[in-house]
Amino acid sequence: MYSAEYLSTYPYFRQTLESVPLFAVHDSLTGLISRKYMLDFVRDLVERKVSFTLGIIDLDNFKDINDHYGHATGDGVLSQLGQALRDCVGQDGLAGRFGGDELLMVYFKSNDYNHIHDLYDSFFKGGRLLRRTYTVNGHDLFITGTVGSASYPEDAKDYDSLFAKVDKTLYRGKSKGRNCYIIYVEGKHGHLEIPKLAKRSLYDTLREMAEAFDQGGDTEEKLRWGFAPIRENLRMNTLMYLDGEGRLRDVISGQDLGVTGHVDSLMENGLYAPDKLAECYDANSVLAMTLVKAGYESALFFRLEGREKGSRCLILCPEPHTMHIWQDEERCAAFFLARLLDETGQ
Image (cartoon, rainbow, N blue to C red; front, top):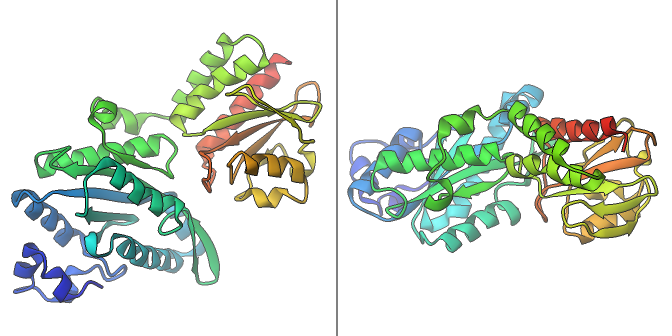
């Protein structure tokens, strides 16, 4: 929990604590600042024209944790994650619970885009907050989240506009497959509309895939064009094609990565989605090392049927150096792309 001494360094809390006990401003589960006082704090900062960055962290698929392991385990994750967020922000701001599985931070050190980018990078890639395993009640739970962020006064001149832009970036992150952070940039995000982002469905992505796939010529062109909507909408970085001779090719760059062998031994059915590529070493060390050397930490494998049953495979990879929990939307899109190719008989 934040001490009264630290909170009193901010005029809003110094005044609030004159009439409200310290425990009342804290969220009882996470020890962070509760929603009411955090939002009032943000309003006060805007009224005082204090420069800051606002970020909202929405945990990905958190309902699944409650459903599979119980609410006590979910509460334990939130408690640990709240402490981790407070440590990340440190003396440069405050962290609060926005509600449910959403946390919020106010950060004062800098509004510079590159600085904020590095801060969120440390959240995700440094293992400080997200893409991190939390152990609760004997369960090791790999947690990811989506972050939306905007700064005052650079991005917005009032409280409502600031939250609207944070919301917009958060929805943008969700529409791109979650497990990422989006920092508001007017030229990139100013035209986006939340209702359209929120309503965007898997159907839209599949329809775009089918239309693009049909425009392609040979196998690689069809795959490259069909993959484009997955890359844009679901934030996948790379598509690889393992042919019938066990040769691996990067569909996007056209690079031939050599013979790596088949993946039949990796899969009991047509799908293999390991949390870590290290799980692949025993079955196919050459393929695993090829992907790791290319900078990937996780991959989604889909076996193609077609004329050479079990001998060809599509491999989808997220951004390099990213641990990834594969979402249902991504699995469905990969399956659809594989079936599109199967139907051509190529």
